[in-house]
Image (cartoon, rainbow, N blue to C red):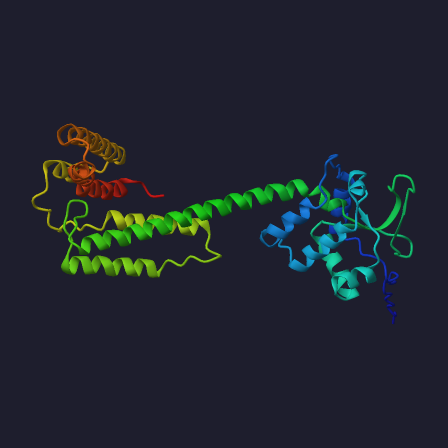
Length: 336
């Protein structure tokens, strides 16, 4: 009977740094680092402090603080020379950050995973540097190399610009949402006082039903810090559709309207046409005020009180008509 002898592969010596794929990628980025003469070593840190938690690979606050400490222990010349090497010991780093040595080692592993640093190790892993006594440049350094972070500065700038554009779009949409919601509440206030909407009077049970629908609609809209711009845009579309459908088909037509309002009710909504009419009405009102002031001066003399009395009604010209035109203008606008 044969005896099968199995041999286990001999274990490599422990204590060596594992060269993972992240190490290799970080080392490649370090070799490609080619800074401009006006390179700002803290620019990447500022971007990380503002947007780091929102990057595709999220940076924790502790990692960002760790990077800031490392960058602060370099000089501008080190970056321009392509040797941003931090040779501060692990123990000293732990003392400055107020954490343990094992936590420093863990943070550095995470920074390698994020391709922000790489190591230039000595034979015994001691960290040191020799600088030129005349120029202060690093002649030989061993420790943490921040060149990968410098190489990623262009990428960080692009990501920061994208996030800033998204934030601006979100703020703009949130303002539109708030304005539209307040406008609809203003429409309800006018309806309660008997004002028409889209040429129809809505009152009683119809008004209560529409108000309940609006309340239920708002109940499903929650905007918080994590609400995206696309979600807010969807809310605006819902409110816009609700606004255009406030007047039910069976609502009674408003009696006693002038010919112009009947023409507006009969024709489809045309935002450009209604805007033009509002502008023309405002212009007509301004001309009427000027004419009344001129006539008052001619007929009544320079008496300020008489002129003010004669012009008082001019500032109230066609107020109700402008309100109705404004309502129809909002209904005619496309969804934001």
